[in-house]
Image 1 (tube, helix red, strand yellow):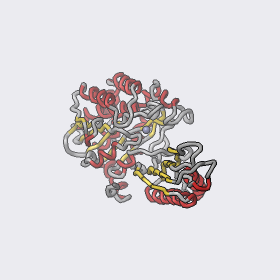
Image 2: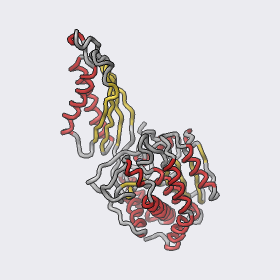
Image 3: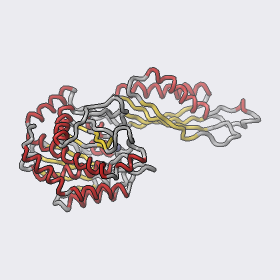
Image 4: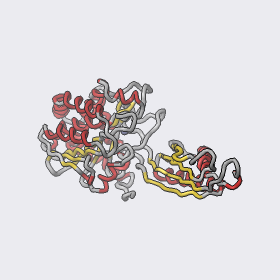
Length: 399
Ligand SMILES: [Zn+2]
């Protein structure tokens, strides 16, 4: 392994030295779940953890009060960003384990920060709000927070250790149907049911699933099912999340779903209004960086697989980052394989468990080792760059 053994030892010691505070930080954030863009306590506690160790914390990055940045090192040379998330979910709290992501990132930054200057590079910690549907990282990309950053990394809790698992490109579609009301018993023939069109949309989409490529997900719910039982529904509405392994398939499936809504509206002779919101981009894992992270993880006692087709994929705004700079988003187990999954109550419990905390500390060490490795190993940097350029480099801004 190219990383000098004494550097690896120094990193592990630095994480161990603040392990108790990191675990307390993770538990505290877990106990006070805050939704997207409302993570005021979490970002403040993270800032206090960093300030107490001599780091200056820049708050309000990209115009978001709960985004922050800290940096350490030579102020020149290679630059690596470590990303923290800390938002929770409605109803299930920290069921995505972002409290552990926060602790792992803070620990990795503190450990790497002490060595980055001597290594001739810089480590940046980015506090990124609102991964759960808000896309804080997208705002940070737009605001230039990734300008001058050479690689970006974070880890995410899971039920198994995977280095380069997929994350799907996503979009949100909303359909509002407008029909004609009439008395549902006296004059049903005079009405045009918006609800029938709404439900037909689901049936038509289901019929099209045989034409979807592997990895596609289309899931929706009815947000307005009518106004009264004795009135032919004048208004109905539904929304869908559409996901695919890349932007091209996403656009294709999105067009199919929209076509289904228009066809359903035509069949019921009602009007439909379409609205859409861009979701997240697919994750492009830089394998050279992911494998190096995997080597450090293995040195710390955990052997990760590269990917696992038996488990599904979600979406993350780290995908957007991965189209701007070479990135990794490894997944590390905080529960036994198959025992629980993100967004379940049992996963939230695991995010507060001793095992969850241990995984955050291992992640901190592996990320800090990988960051230092990046700063000190020109061969690794060359391999990452070659892979990045091989797929065309930085994409044009998507939006
Ligand atoms: Zn998550």
